[in-house]
Length: 108
Image 1 (cartoon, rainbow, N blue to C red):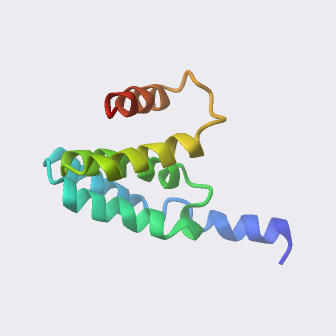
Image 2 (spheres, one colour; image 1 turned 180 degrees about the horizontal axis):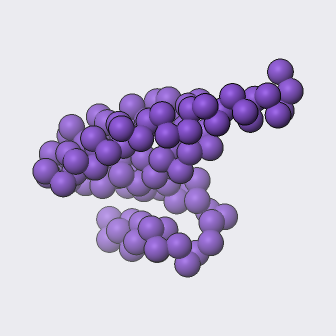
C-alpha cells in the first residue's frame, strides 16, 4: 500500500475515538477518576486508530489527570511524562501544553 493510500485510509478513522474521549472528560467532570482513566486508556490502546488525531496525544494528558484524581500519583506522573514527550517539539505557546507543564511540575 502506498503512503498516499495509507494516509487516505487513516483519515477514515479521524475522530473515531472522540466519543470515548468525551466520555472520559465527562467522568473527569464528575470526579470519577478511575472511570475516566479507563476511557482514556482505551484511546491509548488503539494508537493505530488515533495516530493523526489530536485526541491520541491528549488522551495521555487526560489519563494523567484521571490518575491524579484517583489518587495514583506515580501513574499520573508517567502519563504526563508520556504526553510531554509526545509534544516535545510542539510550539511552547500552546495553552494546553503550558498547563500540562505546570500540572506536571506540581507532581514533584
